[in-house]
Picture 1 (cartoon, rainbow, N blue to C red):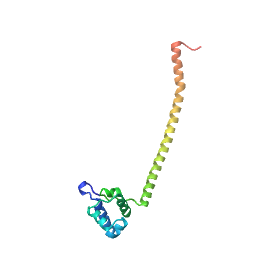
Picture 2: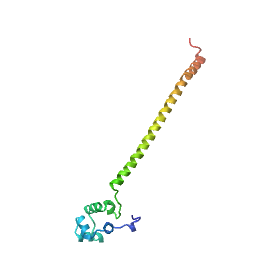
Picture 3: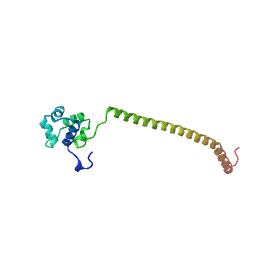
Picture 4: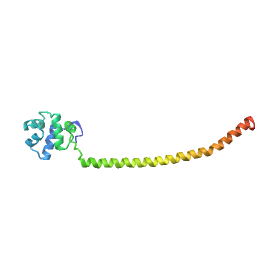
Amino acid sequence: MPVNEKERQSAGDCIRQLREEKGYNIDSLAGLLLLTPKQLTGIETGRATPDGMTLALAGYVFGVYPDALASGQIVTRKSDTEFMEQAKQILSYLESIKENNSQLREYDDTLQKEIAAMEKEKEPAQTQEKEKRTEIQYGPRL
């Protein structure tokens, strides 16, 4: 994959490279891309620019992303199997987060109950202290 603009290829260069790697001749690839051999040669040599349909068909034939191809890059699409494997990994990760969250929720609930119990224990002491202060200020209740 090109790193900077000087190393970047044209879409035609990418199509030629992929055609050669996959073993297609000009005639057979031109037919798959719904082009004449002369049109395909023009694209590969840079005399013509591929349109969106040509890029989409080339992307399908070679298993690459058409938008990357248009920008002079070859980015291979993942197969269905690779997508499924990645989806399984993501689901597994999400399940672990869910499990961790439920453990945290249980811990939080436990802490909330303990805090509530401690506050209840304080209530009688606070009430008694308040009554003592009232007695000191106003005298005993009758």
